[in-house]
Image (cartoon, helix red, strand yellow):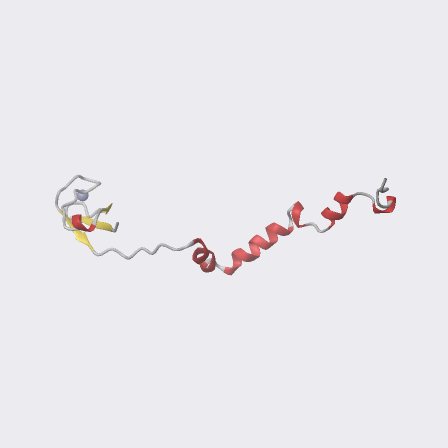
Length: 96
Ligand SMILES: [Zn+2]
């Protein structure tokens, strides 16, 4: 459903309404003052983006911020896996 915008002739406030195309020319009272003297105005188009598109549009500086934050997490430490295995000098457990 498109979003229509109406400007109030009395207080100049803009009211946005999501409505079916069939209601595009229906009157819409002003949200602020309740006046019926509103006119539909041309609103800027809104675009729905996928999450991938939103990520691609992010400023590259956020990549660096995320990388820096990841470097400081415990999961990013390569020694973590070695430490989890325990002491290697004890050798492998006996196969009995
Ligand atoms: Zn108004």
